[in-house]
Image 1: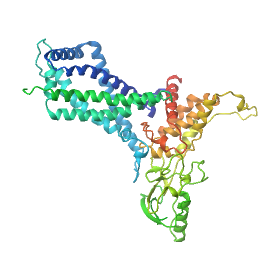
Image 2 (image 1 turned 90 degrees about the vertical axis):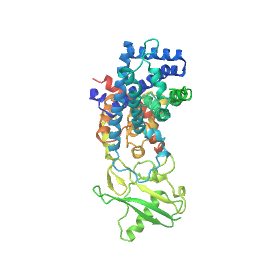
Image 3 (image 1 turned 30 degrees about the horizontal axis):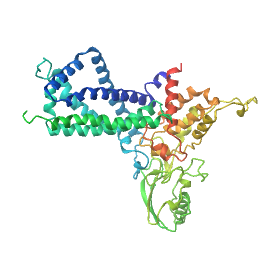
Image 4 (image 1 turned 180 degrees about the vertical axis):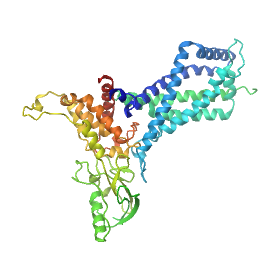
Length: 228
Length: 249
């Protein structure tokens, strides 16, 4: 019983949801720290960013962590879908009249929908940049590195790209707003002394991280050179 | 006051069921919600119609028998009360009131507003007890030193009356708050610690078997619970279960 309890039970699914989710939160911080380099739109900034992109796609330790990251994203999504299907089955007949907002926040009840939208964004985002960096036809910069910067700058010169990215960050913000503190509760880390701190940190993280991510496309759009 | 009730009617477990409108007059604001339903049922019986089936027993908020999803909330508007403690003064003359049974796969409707909450009994039977030899050599409970804070928290958990409002309110029909309360009330006390590992594993296993949904930590159960059972008990169960899964042979 104890072995299956860590794999198949309802609580086990939540542990894995929490662990992969918190790992993805750590990734967001690292990803944001690297990408804020894009705010420097000078020629030197371009070379620096391209060198960073090369390092991130070739350094062995980063490569190993990136495989763990892909696995976490897929597992978090897969586990989430199973949980959602089970939850739907648990209430086959809905209430005719329900005041759900009286007792919980809308985004806490819509984690599956928000998560699906984030997943769609991740797929688009990886096609835009990750796929092109690995296998796309990219030019070289003055230092002989693949010129990812120019691809990003060209993408964020288009209003549609900027709009999709900013909207996706709003979705991510609501997903994190519930997800961050929920992960601690799922792991059993709820204590009257520390839970208020966890909740406050969670809300700050949920607002600040997506805000800075959204700032990058907006900044690059506003400061784009008129001639492409 | 005059009210319009929209009440779920269902002849039996297999019947499809539907919402039926009942106008009621002469409702006193001093009536409890159940007394108002009693008056309506009295009228229905006099007219030769089938009365509305609903669960009730002590009518003082301690037995856990009454249920009802009233105007979109478990046990209706108001906090820390059961339906029997809900009074008609909470409503206004001319109001329309929606009355539905608890909705969960694990709580099948028996008739009208009465649901089968036997799933809770089966979870309790799986491990929600302390085994005691009744051979006459009982130890005085007061002889065991228990920190006051632990005793208080265990008592808070033990105030759960098993009404099922947590399941009814949860968007996933999850029974986590109920099971967590039952796990916590024993896990905190020395008498309960002996069987703690088996208890949490067995009760969660039974909970999963009954077809309740998964907890997504929305916190709705805590808000609607008539006894104000805290989410901290769910966290305690999560800890207990994780530790038991890892350390049990």
